[in-house]
Length: 489
Image 1 (tube, helix red, strand yellow):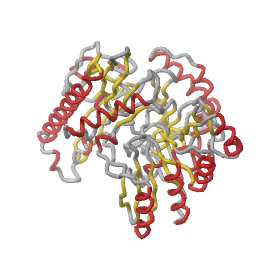
Image 2: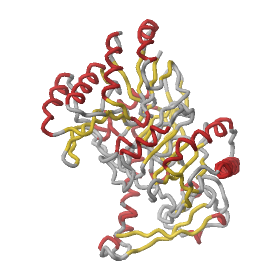
Image 3: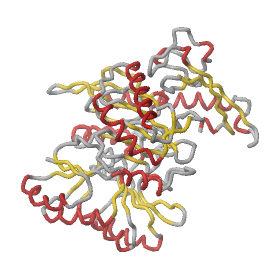
């Protein structure tokens, strides 16, 4: 059986972690894993669990044995200062939010700054996404057991995130949502309930949320930021030895590094390393023979927690793609073995079925190849495992052909790349008023055979929102300003 420990926000103090690792090592547990929701796992026998009872009871971290009914709260705290340039979401904001949770949620909660690409922002049930307005967040509801969303019509204040989550959780958990209209009506009722209570600070949405482009950062090895270093460690087996983590804690405590961070990619990050103490880190890495030179082709894959079949398939495909020198920059891949798992990616290998000798998958890609989009388009309906590599290569080729096409459009857009900084251009987009989905003529809508470059006015009257199926007439025009073509960057 396994023990799951939640690390709220994907962060744990080095002292607390060290106090957990020593008893694990004492009872013979040699390895632990980090999960896709930044949680910690380890396997135990009945004897080991009995010996650890006192240790677990005295941990402040929430844990469950053999189940995951109370998911970890994930956050982009790990990316702060490394992979984002947010104007107001800082360490103190994350700490205030995480400290305000005085209950263990049964819904998946994401607290994410969209100005980074390391942590997803739409894989939860309550997705709080930082807005342009300081201390206010967009809220995207995803109803449990479905891919149906409702966008909260106002911004949520930082101080209200935990209280609003507590209010919404019982109703959302018990709700039966089967259609987009069910979700819209139920979401409106939830908003009305929150307004009637009168204890929450909501602000109108001045600027609609537009999904940024995705570029997964290289999250491994020693990297310089400001006047310090950060270290990212990825393990091909998705396991970390307890002795290695114990030594990391020792070095952190020795040099007053207070926290460790886990990522949704099942890796760990250490911040605030002074360059002068790097030799101490090299000693630990040498002692445990840690390799820090994995290709991005391997770092951009996600598998479900504790799934040896998916891990083996990932390793097989990565090996073949590396041998062929395949470029996968701006893409990430997920292997989805269970229908309702939280696996995300711009390309998804969705398991269909298997027999004694063969397995079949459905290959999908997310709209605009943005892994934070929950709208998936089927590329191939039925692919045998041995044919997956060929299909992935074809899909990668299609993706880069699409990038070439958009680059050509940029170069021919009245010299937009050469505009002086004070000159603005704009594009007219249209947004669904029910679910906030945006129609962008640059992309069109492949789900309804709408070609890229099709203006909204030229859409047929039968056109509807691909997400909530609202009619064309429900879309409203919005104006998006672009300076020096940053909209495409």
